[in-house]
Length: 200
Image: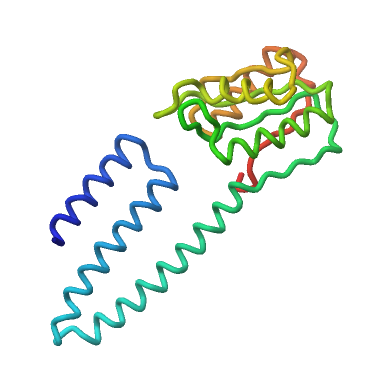
């Protein structure tokens, strides 16, 4: 049973890390898998009276680490889902950073960013928005294209929306968006607000 669990964990980690890339989500789920395999091993060892005290101590350490990790995970997720903006700033452009799709549907994190973007853009009708995000695994269109559709559905005029569809990370969101801005405004005197999550 333990060998099968270990094999499943190794296959999972291989797929998560080398096929889909190392992300916070895959790493966290992988660590959960490691925890359960190790917990099962400790339970097997606990049946042997020679290791009773040692196993009890290790299990206590494991449980504390798990609780700390779980609380940290919830804290980070809270930051990711929390989006704030300052409606009093005077800017020329807003950049909304991508955050994943399910097919063509924005993730919860991305929906929160877009809703904040809609709110900001309606209060600042002179601002042009760049929606930034390429197409990832499991996404049928680019994040930018899905974001554009969402903004239009929520009352933002199509001619106010610029697509940046090459980026695959937050740093690329900013770099490629800046390239677009530099091409549009050669004097480079523009001011920008970035609409993203608190974790950034």
